Image (spheres, rainbow, N blue to C red):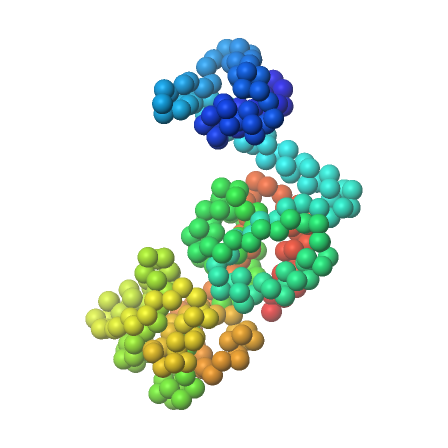
Length: 297
């Protein structure tokens, strides 16, 4: 078995075409076919079957070999990154996924510092909802995910970063500001701005569950996927917003708003740095994490 055979097999399966795989690997279609045939002869089994117009289909043995090929290619990529670290070139690739609010409010300054120190690291940032962040980390499509701790499954490695508090966002002169504690019944008197229902946002689901248990009627006047948008409409007087925030953010402090704690109803949460347990972070990724953790408070 040779390295080019593994690469050729992987590309044939992923591209579902010998022609496209040959182009991707700078090989002739005939040479690629011979590589696959050589693998099948070596292992004495069929790996790929032609499925007529539907393209190609893996045998059971082919599925097992694909799993091996994917792990081998990931290992090759990790090896190359480690070599670059040893050579002190500070090269590599760092792919990060996080919700919009985290990217907008919490990352810019840290990223600015990181890019100045590691200009040769190839950065990719993805704006994704919490559930998609988890899926991307699990699949290995990103190296690091920033998500709420309660959303991260046991199978991922996590490091706590920033504490998040559930609050009601209201104008400074709003009647709720006069209360020592905001109850659910008092909150439901006003039109609510909440995260979109289809995102299955944990905070919204918990809030609505409590409303149902207590038999409280409420009205959602707007669905907003980020705090910045919600805050703008709270300022306009459209309604009040329930949101999870990190205290002291300058972008929110600049607005004419009050943030009333719902800590008596919702436990504090944490944003965590999430990554796969089976892949040790490269040096340039560790440096980025350390930079973030320096701004944890």
